[in-house]
Amino acid sequence: MRIRTLLLSALLVAVPAASAYAAKPAIKILATGGTIAGAQASAQSYGYKSGTFSVDDLIGAVPQLKEIATLSGEQVANIGSQDMNDEIWLKLAKRVNAALADAGTDGILITHEHSDHIQGLAAICVRVCVPIFCNRLTMEAIAAHCPIRLDYRIFSTGATFEVGDITVDSFSVPHDAYDPVGFLLRTASANIGVLTDLGHATKLVLERIRAAHILLLEANHDLKLLQDDTRRPWSIKQRILSRHGHLSNDSAADVIEQIISADLRRVYLGHLSQDCNRPELAHRAVSARLQKIGANHVHIESTSQEVRCATFTI
Image 1 (cartoon, rainbow, N blue to C red):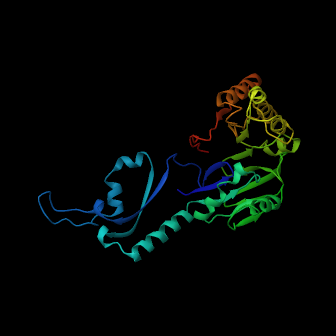
Image 2 (cartoon, rainbow, N blue to C red; image 1 turned 135 degrees about the horizontal axis):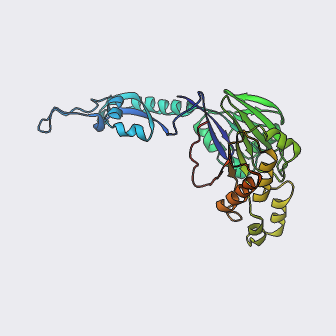
Image 3 (tube, rainbow, N blue to C red; image 1 turned 120 degrees about the vertical axis):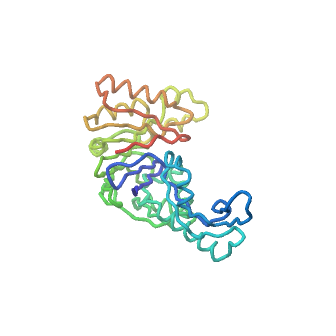
C-alpha cells in the first residue's frame, strides 16, 4: 500500500492513501544475482552456478522477514559477481535513483527558515527530487544560504493548498523569523496540526488548530531550568521567553486546555530544549493539566531528537 509522505521541517508525517497501514518499514531490494542467488545440485557436486534464484525466491526463503518489514524486490540482473559490467552498474544506478525519487514523498513543508529546521534540506533534495512548499519570504531566506537550486512551490501565508491528496491550511504564528507559519493537514482519516516555534498562541492560531485530531505541539522549555541555565546569556533567555520566542511546558498546557475537544486524540510534545527541558517534565506538566480539566481521552507523548516515535495509524 502506497504511503503518501510530507516532510515538515522537523517532523515526518506519514499518511496512508487508504484508511490504515502496517507500522513496518517498507524495504525495496534491487537484486543483481551473485553468490547469494547461486545453487548447485548437491554439496558434493561441482555444478555451482551463481545467479540461479530470483530476488522473490530469496525473500520467500526467509518468511520471518515479513514480520519485521514489508519487502519488495526488483530483478535488475541475475548474474555472477564476476560478470558485472558498466552497463549493469549504470542500470542499477538508474534504478536506485528512480526508487529514491518514487519514495512516496509528495512535498516538504517549511514552517520557517531557522537553521535547526532547514539544515538537512539541501542534502535531502540532492538525493530526492521533491518540491519545497513555503511562503515567499521564507524561500528568499533559504535561497540566500542554500548551495543548490530547489523546486519551490510558493504559498501565501493563510492560504489553503493541496499536496498530493492532503489539504494543507497555513496560518501565521508569532516567532522571530521572516514569515513563520503553522499547518493543519486535512486527510480523509484525520486532521494533523503542526504548531512549533511560537512565543504565544494568538486567537488566530487557536482557531486554526482547533480542528486537529492529532497535534505536534511545542513544549520547548521548563521555566526554572531555563532561568537556572548557565550556558545561555540573559539576552537569549529574554528572546526565548518573549512573545515571539518559544512555548514553555506550562504554555503548551495552556494551549491544549484552550483547544480541547472530544476529537483531539493525541498530542506529541516537540521541540524540547536539550538543556532546558526534560521529556518527563513536559509530559508531567501537560498531563496534569489534562487531568485537571477531565480530558483523560487525550494521549500525550514526548518526542526526542534521538529516538523516533512509534508509528501511529490514523
